[in-house]
Amino acid sequence: MTDAPRAARGLWRRIADAWYRVLCALMVTALVVLLVPVSLQILSRHTELIPSYIWTEELARLMFIWIVMIGAMVGLRERTHFVVDLWPTLSARANARVELLSGIGILVFAAVFVYGGWEFTEFAIYRISELAELPLWTIHMAWPLLGLTWLLFQGEHMIDMLRVLRSADTARN
Image (cartoon, rainbow, N blue to C red; front, top):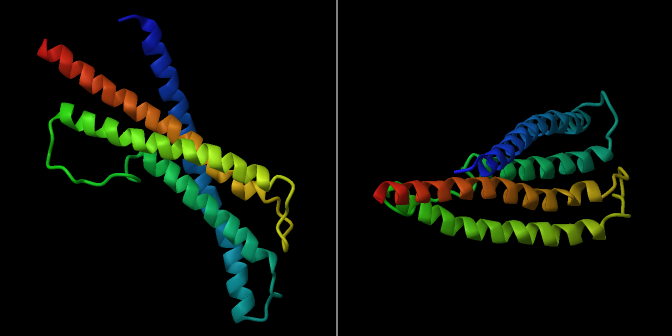
């Protein structure tokens, strides 16, 4: 085996690891930011300490959407988002085959999110929200980014499963 595929695999894994760490930090940040408008909404509804702000609802929705989408990205990397145990305990080789087959479905969904999400984002590129005047593309961009991230993380996992199949074939011969 040459060093070129191993170096490329190492680069892919380093990129995926770095992106995963960025996503985790963004999810925590988005959750902290979400607390601000929600807290303002609660305070303004139940006390007269501050006026009722309208923009807080839109910011809370924006943060919630991003938290859900980033959570779906992180969940796929951690193998907790699309995992359903239907089969009994399988051998490593059989499990790799099942993972590759289901991975194809995930790649199809990822491609749909990239393509459809890009069209969704283009639709909103010059639009703004009514109350807070937030650019709507900042919300819509979550969908193609989700698809691209799924392609990255699922590709990484499928390479791992192909390695399991290869190692099982090599051990058998």
